[in-house]
Length: 69
View 1 (cartoon, rainbow, N blue to C red):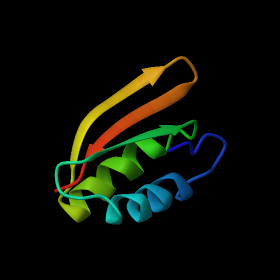
View 2 (cartoon, one colour):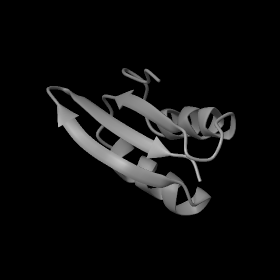
View 3 (cartoon, one colour):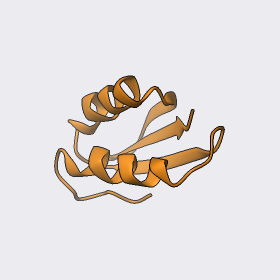
View 4 (cartoon, helix red, strand yellow):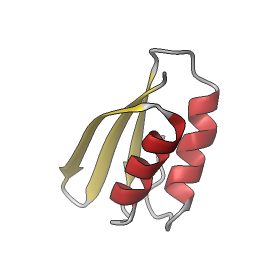
């Protein structure tokens, strides 16, 4: 999912909506550029019980991998 250029809290909100469409065990890859996405995505996973598999910085982009539980 590409959320580059979107400001907080939109990356987390779009990720939450996309995660609802996934089956347990499936993964969602989220690209973001807003530095606040680090905290927002972590808080999203804590609230939903989904697992944050990876959180990396790739150049100017943040890359998150979330596993649906």
